[in-house]
Amino acid sequence: MSTLPFQQSDGPLRRPPELGELQAQGPVHPVTTAVGDPAWLVTGYEEVRRLLADDRLGRAHPEPERASRSGESALFGGPLGNFDTEQTDHRRMRALLQPHFSPKRMRALRPRIEELTTTLLDEMEAAGSPADLHAALALPLPIAVICELLGVPYDDRDRFRAWSQAAADVTDRARSEQGLADLFLYGRDLVARKRAEGDPDADVISCLAATDGVGDDEAAMLGMSLLFAGHETTVTAIGMGTLWMMSTPGEWQALAADPGRVDATVEEILRGFGLGGGGLVRYARTDLDVEGVQVRTGDLLLLDTGAANHDPAAYPEPERFDPDGSGAPHLSFGHGARYCMGAPLARIELSVVFAQLVTRFPGLRLGLPVEEMTFDPKTLTGGLTALPVTW
Image 1 (cartoon, rainbow, N blue to C red):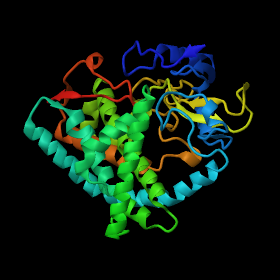
Image 2 (image 1 turned 120 degrees about the horizontal axis):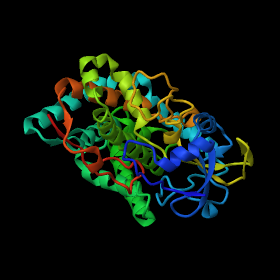
Image 3 (image 1 turned 135 degrees about the vertical axis):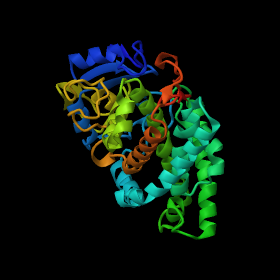
Image 4 (image 1 turned 30 degrees about the vertical axis):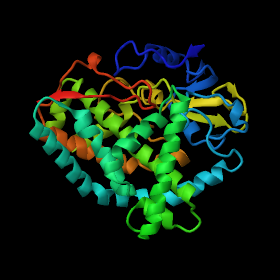
């Protein structure tokens, strides 16, 4: 039986060899998680896609204290929510938040995202080559955008960024729980300030604070969940997307020559930067059969969207960066009722970033070989800690 996490012996841009071997054997595999618990790792594209939309799976567990865990993260490592009311609670959450993330509203943000990106790139260019693209752009841009959308003071970014990284720690549950608690307490204070200001149209948290039937705790929980989710994965996608493109001969130059390819390039970045070997935590709400595997109520399934996005059955050359490829739609934002609400925002941010980057810096180059880049092994997204570049 395989034990997670898999060893990444072939570099940061290739699937772990053991994962590739498992995928060749079938779509569902018994594994032991990083904390020693049993789970089913689902790696096949069609199976992951189908199970993401299967209401027989959920995030809650009938006996949470006995549930298998994927890691120590308080937010992502184990069960969440009330087993009996989970689906109703999820529908309520979506109903409260979905209007704020409609494609129309996100498109209206584009000019501001372009302005913020231009300012950050102006500062990077003025400081001169070499630069750290992570610190100059990948990190501050998503934080600035989500701060403006939610109504979170940008000056607080160092604090909530530290809390977010602590909450996402997959190795230290005490640190993760403390980070989550700090975020929640900050959210409570912010909601109280929004209520006092009394302007429901100012931003998302102000609107939540003014909504009938939404208490301080719920508004704080929703707001801080958005703050965390609204920047962490986009930071990683900008860094890993740049790294992947620059490691593919001719790809950066091709985009610079034809910026109209940016949307297709963004979709390929979203498909490719998560290589698999983990997965979205789901618990079986009933007994079910998954491709001949008998899954019991309460079993942990890890729906590995990264592996699915590199399934040879869905992508002819899964490890090749190929914006013009004819593979299946990626599953990086999920599928079904839990499809990521922030997908339109993430797509716009990435589109703006790469359109401006290749236009301003067509000769951008990596400042270090890929194998010398450093990554954060403790956090869920596992993104770059720095991205040295020259031009």
